[in-house]
Image (cartoon, rainbow, N blue to C red; front, side, top):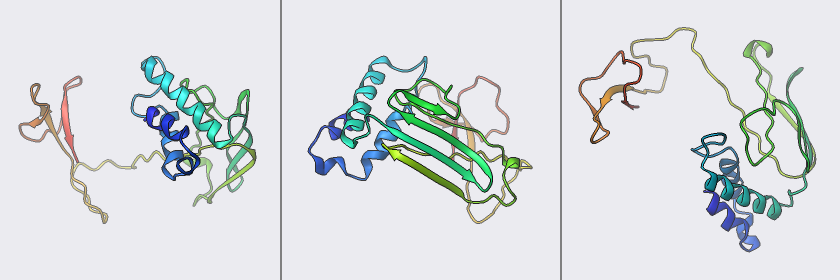
Length: 184
């Protein structure tokens, strides 16, 4: 993905405005499938850094000066400011990436009931990507099938060490460390 982003960012301008380019840049920035940090592939990280640098240059965002505020009613969700020297605000102690990331965690109980809409306010120049994640933990875990308009079935089976396919009858309990195949 980093090589594709790099190639597209360096091509003539008609490709630089394609709708998939910002999505690809975001995917590369957050580490794609492999992620960043101690287990990252150094070669992949180098290509990602080059690609993101070329992308920023192509978008006029190599020297950002952007302030972002995200709120829900009276609750501050995130306040951060990006400049050419990095990011200030939010939780910036996440895994190391080639981009300056800001994040924050807000507990559901801190929001109004029902929660108000998210309001995004950005002032300045440069391009930023915003993602919101909602972690849902059901109040009660159901062991039997439950229907609420969408039918999803999960089957857990032991993995065949040769083929990697699920074998045997569906399992309810699995010992820690065992390799299984989960089919949805």
